[in-house]
Length: 77
Image 1 (cartoon, rainbow, N blue to C red):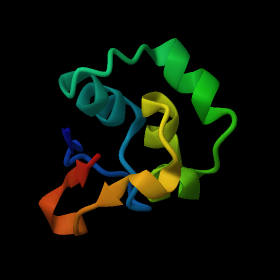
Image 2 (cartoon, rainbow, N blue to C red):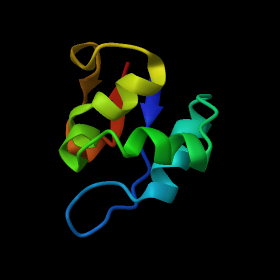
Image 3 (tube, rainbow, N blue to C red):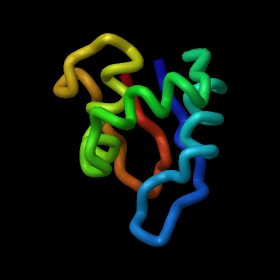
Image 4 (cartoon, one colour):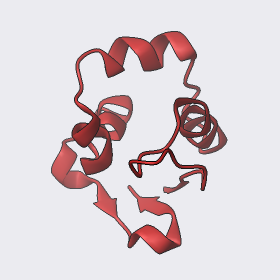
């Protein structure tokens, strides 16, 4: 599965909540704002960058998530 992350970024380099949810939904993960908020409460922002956040959606281990270079804006799962 190839997950395309939205290009919209906040100043600190992380995807915005809206763009991140849109990217997850476009990849077929059916993410609601409520589910996002529930998982986000247990994560640090660095976790989102490192794949722990996505791993929780996919029920995978964080080390199973491979991040492509930032300029490609893709995540290979």
